[in-house]
Amino acid sequence: MGQREMCCSTSIVQGLKPVMMMLVVQAAYVGMNISYKLVAEVGMNFTVLVAYRNMFSAALMLPLALIFERNRPKLTLGILFQGFISGLLGATMAQNFYIESLGLTSATYAVAFNNLIPVITFLIALCFRMEKLAIGTRTGRAKVVGILVCVGGTMIFTFYKGHEIVIWSTDVNLLRKYSHQNSHVLHRNTRTQLLGSVLALCSSISFALWLIFQKKMTRDYPCQYSSTAMMSIMASIQSTAFALCRERDWSQWKLGWDIKLFTAVYSGVITSGLVLTLTAWCVRMRGPLFVAIFNPLGLLLVGLAATLLLDEKLHLGSILGGVLIICGLYMVLWTKREELKTMTEQPPSVLEESHSISNIASEQ
Image: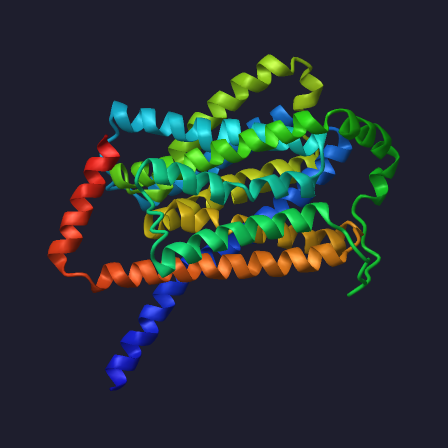
């Protein structure tokens, strides 16, 4: 009996690992968005920041890959090409689109668009037969409803304010020292809101495609550190070339001991290095939809952090939207757990047959 309880507790801990990893990922993205907001107020060139971000990521991940994955599979031209596509989709395109949209709109608005990633990922996964709609089953209906609830909560969080609610009050406002620079940013936001929305949508599509592509890459090259290092190296080359075409003023490339250096190091080491490694691991363990469904939680965390650190106000719409986001997230997590339970309860012959069918579908 004791051994059975021990095995049960071990399986619970193993099942919670991907959830805990994704919570760490979303918490790390909160720090990135706050620092991005500060850099936007300072006026750093965004393409240069993305280039430095991928450079720092490559500088971290390459030594880790050489130390911890010495027996990795041999690199082939096919794997290198996959690394090039992975860097293009998940880093160069997604990051440049996202940070440009953040500069044209606002941090909350850009994060809100990121919450379309679960829907986009689900639709793409349906096209590639990586997910099943199964609308006739209880889990299938719950999955669809959960995604719609997350999106609905995101829309309420973003577009509906309602009464102002004071839960806590702090005197911390990291933007106070840059308040004299806000006028031109607001004017630019008003004129280019549509362009910022299009760029935010392009960023979401690019990241959703990267999540789908990661499923194939982690199967062909199951080395998290090495694949992330290869992706970072490819992305640093791509983003640096793009930044050199966009910015010829070398003063924009200088980094001092300020928020610019902190943001470049943080976004490179934490979000492009360690976080992408955790994300790739979770994609391999639970699939791209499981990872994408945590994005709405990031909006809730950014909203809370903004009230604490940027002196932004919390409204009734934020509370209602946050509750819906959590409810939708729980529903999708429940469906993924039920699907995993059903797969583990199937006979080995059925599992082998379904695995061979999925391999044929992915090759096509």
